[in-house]
Length: 152
Image (cartoon, rainbow, N blue to C red):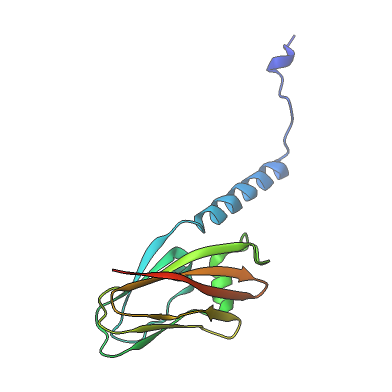
């Protein structure tokens, strides 16, 4: 006779195991959206930031600019795709994104990749300056709100 404490308490079907795996995978993806990693761009030409690099959280603009330059963000659809399906699009998800103008010698201006993405507040970065933005995800739209800067 098997003691009751040796019997499995619940039986889990293969479908339920798959669902648990999907939930865990989504949780890891969403948790990773809050982590930050740096992507670097040369400023010899006006850089276009990739959606994956924007989602990383830190965009560094390096030396090489001969004049002021624009830094173009990806399209809204590309940003939403890089953030993934587990990121809510109801205004409750916000990620801090930092742009670092690292000794480029010139002023950088952050510009939206398309109309559904908007930049609120100062979008310029003087030489040797970092600027933080709160990137908020709305239904089919992204807002980047300037929340401060620092001198390097």
